[in-house]
Length: 584
Image (cartoon, rainbow, N blue to C red):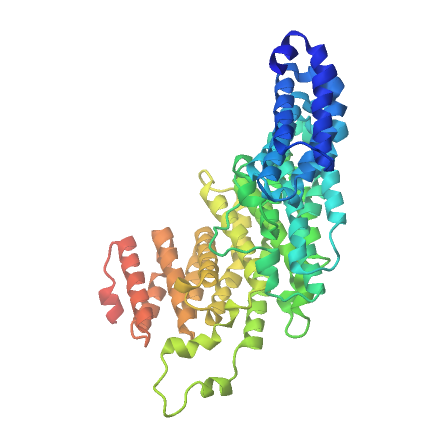
């Protein structure tokens, strides 16, 4: 009846049907309804039909329809079939209204945004909530939506508790993740003219405010007495098995993957997409200015990222490092996303601005890891007690197991190192992989400087493997080694002349460690370099042969096997046998 009436004679529909449906929905939202939930669902369906027929002809009744729909969707926070069906029906009606009258919905915009970011809606169909959010982006003019999103994000940050249990920050982080996704969607479709007219300084301030959520949550949780290891599992929601690649496009930003639970790492990824989409619509000078602002913010008044932590010998609690570590992780995520979205600016802009900071982060991460290992590994007396003279000899793995303490003590070294290595690898690969012909003098100098500054720090991170289990059975150890090896390949690829041999020699020098996992990691890193770069690193062949001949006599069979795989890889790259050289 409404479909027919709205089309042929809309006045009675507007006068009688719309107010009646709105009144019914208001009763259900207030909990005073005397009929079943199916009546409210039918009212929502009726309103969707009317909206479909009248479109903007419904504007005069917007104030009648929207408030009860918003209240019903917000009040349907309980579990159960009726609540889920009511909430879904209300959200579908809201979506229809937004699509029909989006440009005129400003008075209710903040309530609509709040509805989509609230954790209370998590039990509903998440795709439907995301659909409402995407409809807002598609239907509301960005000049109206962006300020509302920024205001909502600012309010969400102000609501952050200064000190609370780790778990309490989940809903606060989730709100920021969803506000960040709004910005990513808006900027991905925005024109350069809109970005310029909307005030890029204010937009950058908003992006930095969003990405500060992770460090604020870590500081608050640790300040409330939370355990250090609760931060990676509860605040960061770290998943070592998940590839650490930046979001490539707004189409891949789905809430089921990035906005279903509060996660500082997901907040960083989504905000990085917003930043790269924003930066791509600016000229290079403006991008440089904003990158410098982000670096300055993340340094926390230090000369470089984690500069104090990279030189600390003793003293200073790890709890006090939460803000500096969190900001370092965040800014590396921003730069990683930008390097992936705009490969051409890595050697021109990003690496010259950040290479010293990257080296500082890697040094600090290694120092933090070794300090934690020293604090938690057993002493010599404890190791002697593990075996009595009358007992059977312990295996090498059993003897080493008590030393693998970094498995359970990974805050914050694992996350800062991973973020820095991820950005460094992406930036160097894009710089060496996208250049057409010979690089310019400025680009060549930037790459040379980066290699000089970061190569030793990358190689020395292999030392943390002494206190990690074999990577085959440990996601953390596997992810750490994969990140280190990827960076070593990228650094070697960017190196020129004698520097290539120097890097290979530095990696191979780690094979003289007393710990078998350090030796194995160095060998595997060297093999990956040869496998990916081949003849580019042939200048280091003599050093490889020297170390390989020694390692073929290693007491651990896994080392000997790894060396043989390395030799086979080199022979495949060079087309020559190394057997005679190894006998000398």
